Image (cartoon, rainbow, N blue to C red; front, side, top):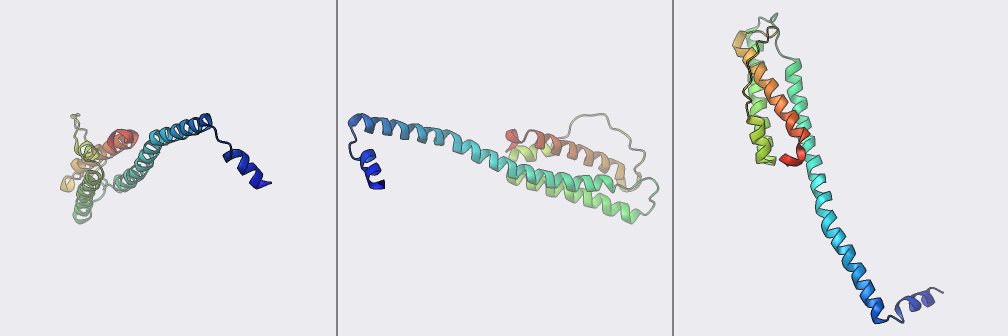
Length: 151
């Protein structure tokens, strides 16, 4: 039974059948040629967004642990400031390694009026680094929202 079906399909192939099969095969190849790169690009962008989300999570941890005015221990404050500086540097390197545009966008500094964060201690320039941390977190959010542009 199966042999009879195969014989009927492939046995009496007329030239019109060959043209039809060739056109159908070409159509399938064209669709694959157009779709596969797009699917691959979306997959790569999702992986890069995951990296940005991890960086953003680390930045939010620093935001939540920012030293308040009640903290007088200069060593703890200095450690926080140094950790923020290290996070900014490592985040920039990670982004630049994945996309030069993302690295540049992360390091971009908008001209905005400086806000005085009175709840943050002024010891060891913690307020300035808190402001810088917020700018960098905002830049990461922009990169994540426009991931197709950056990656």
